[in-house]
Each structure stands twice: as structure tokens, then as C-alpha cells.
Amino acid sequence: SFVYIHRSARVLKRQQVNNCLHFSITRCNLYSSHFQGWLIMSMPKQTSEELFSLSVCHAVAACAGINYSDTARDFGLDGSFCSLSKTEDGRVYQDGWQIDFQAKATSNFAFDDNNLIYDLEVKNYRDLINTRVGNTRILIVYLLPNQKDQWMTINENEIIFRHAAYWCSLFGCEDTTNKAKIRIRIPRNQKLTTAELLRLFDLIKRGERLHG
Image (cartoon, rainbow, N blue to C red; front, top):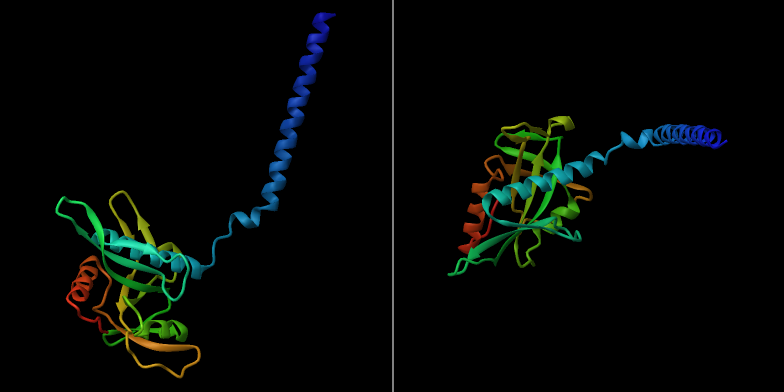
């Protein structure tokens, strides 16, 4: 009788296991069916563009040896580039020189002669023309391919970001009567590169205002 009971227990246990597996597979199929639309969803394109532009700013700052910080709460600015210096004993510290920026990204862009044409929202324009500010501030516009899968290429040898970022200073520009957007022109030679970012800090450290 012991052998019979033992075999019966094994059969019962096998059936329980099979039932559990069947339940788990059925539940997974139900979950997969229920969340199928969620699995293929992604964030809105505009949000992706904004995050990508900030990533490019971060990468440029890192290569230039400049500290970078995001703005926790957006009051007209997206982040800051902060200059670093060294003490006599080699300790690195943030020396107080800073360039605040507002970052934009777009895949709809055009060039006019030697300028990038960009339609900026009026509220952002007014944030950038304001002269009652303590730090230098600039607008950064990052140009992206229209197709998202072309924004970046990664392989063993390199990471390629497309296309390029441009900067301009609107400090002290005239206000506008426009209600929605204002068209601005950014010189094509004002690309945001590591060398250019270091040059901008050199200018403000000498007391010069950024123009254009």
C-alpha cells in the first residue's frame, strides 16, 4: 500500500505541476495580449528630441572638461555649463564661471545663406533676451534627421550623433509683438563643439559679452 500511495502522490504532484504550468502559460499569454500595445509604445518624439539634445550638450561638456548640470525645475533654462579650475595642490573646484542654456531640437530645419533658420517660441525668446540676469545664457538648437533610427549610429569603433548643434546669444535683443513664435537666424559657423565651448568661456572670463 505504501508503494501505491507513493505512486499516487507522484501522479498527483505531476498533475499539479502541469496545472501550474498551464496556468502560468495562459496567464503570460493573457498578459502579453493585454500589454501588447504597451510593449511597442515609446515616448513622444518631441520628448525624445529634447532628451537627445541634452545628451549631446552633456557629451560636448564632458569632452571639453566642463562641468554640466541639468536644471531640476524648468524656469526658462534647461541646464548649465560650469567652468572648473585647480588649486595649487591639484584639487579641482567649480570656479563660478557659468553659461546657462536653453536647448531645442528639431528635424524640421532650413538654411538661408550662411544662417540656420529657426522659429523660436516667444516665451522662450523673452527668457533669452532678458538683460536682468547674472549669468551668460545661450540658445542651443540641435538638428536631427527626420527618421529616428538615423539619430545615432553605434559600432565597436565609434558613436555618431547626427546632425549638429548650433548656439546663439539673444541677450539684449529687441522684444517682439509676435504672439506665438519669432524667426531667428543662427550663423552656421556657430556650431557647439568642444573647442567652441572652451572659446565661449574664454570670452566671458575676459569680460566680453557673447553676440550673435
